[in-house]
Length: 185
Image (cartoon, rainbow, N blue to C red; front, side, top):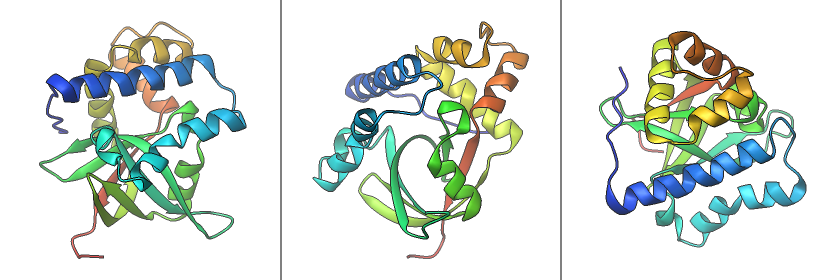
């Protein structure tokens, strides 16, 4: 079972700010690919990390570097995550109904790099088990006050917290488990 420790104080405020911005993006640009301007705004966390200001977001966002499935070039994407410190696994849930490039790249080449909390490591990505994905979604729903509204719009019916509604969300928002490598890269 996934254990995600709760946040408090300033960290909780940062988390809520992140969730609010995510909700705006998911509700306003529902089911439409982001415009070039929005794509630039969504990449802002990459700029913050490169400017050594990643500490502002490092509890909510990690940088995921995948190998492009067509180009073969490294592609770096900011992705929200939940971390299970007991198993040292990072859970990433794909937005926009799973139609995101980083997910397609991970499926083509599961060997990735992650940069989280100032540390870059090699890792292996794999689809999360059904139980882990449901636990991550439940934790996310507890922490994110906007999740129910976002998911209701995406699954087409009111999200009511029942196991059936969680299954619908799981089908729309694939979850990936990223396990850092034991060896130093």
